[in-house]
Amino acid sequence: MEKRVALVTGGSRGIGRAIAEKFAKNGYNLVINYVSDNTNLDEIKEGFNKYGVEVLLEKADVSNFNECEKMVTSAIEKFGKIDTLVNNAGITRDNLLMRMKEEDFDKVISINLKGTFNLTKLVTPYMMKKREGRIVNISSVVGVMGNAGQSNYAASKAGIIGFTKSVAKELATRNILANCVAPGFIATDMTSVLNEKVKENISAQIPLKRMGTAEEIANAVYFLGGEDNTYITGLSLIHIWRCRRIER
Ligand code: NAP
Image 1 (cartoon, rainbow, N blue to C red):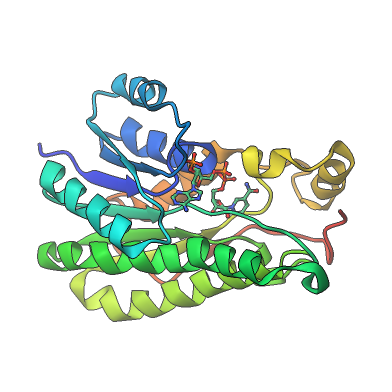
Image 2: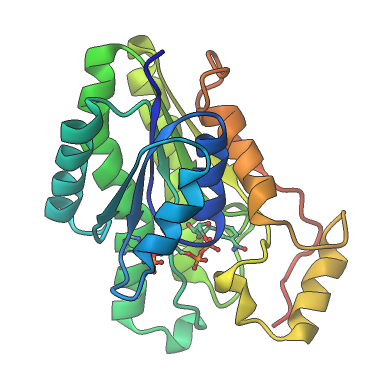
């Protein structure tokens, strides 16, 4: 049987890497996107070889439409289709509003939100032709609740939820399903910069009393972005979170 294909942005590390691995375990060929020059491409490729799937590693800044276009063209040249798109690449540039620089606001919006637009816009024509596709966008609980010191990040992640609900409505008649996963705090490089005290405070506010793992998010993404999802669209899976303010 022809293998299905998943494109995961920011698939080199953290949640994106775990998502790519979940799809690989389920027999998907992969397009893995990354942006840093120091990414260990051999190590990533070897990590997926054991699943017997083909992997295309594509360097592209998701905020740059032209680079995204080249990546999608390469993916189509190699695999002929993209069945699942996971818009996972994201960054933080935290600061209180009073201290936040304009460039830090713009950078976060352009990678997290515009990057999601770029890839969705570029991949959906191929999904439309096949009359099938699944898109999973990674938002954050912060996009729903807000968080002091993260107005840029919260705005980008709230924007992703609105964007996803809108494209879900536009694309449903073409059998393209678009959903969000909005994680709470997950142990990755992104959160490793927090000090132990902050991590303890965060864990105390989580019903399960611990941070999540990237693999636990990957399971939710696969549920929405895998072939077994044939009906759910426009949904945001949001982690339960009790605190009113994340103490820093
Ligand atoms: P991470 O460990 O910092 O990894 C970020 C990934 O995004 C890396 O693969 C990185 O590529 C890639 N990336 C960054 N900027 C990019 C760009 N301009 N173009 C293409 N790729 C880019 O982050 P993470 O914790 O796994 O987070 C993944 C997603 O989950 C993000 O959208 C984040 O906002 C969201 N999220 C995370 C948490 C959490 O607690 N960790 C909670 C809620 C939501 P390189 O390896 O090349 O740098």
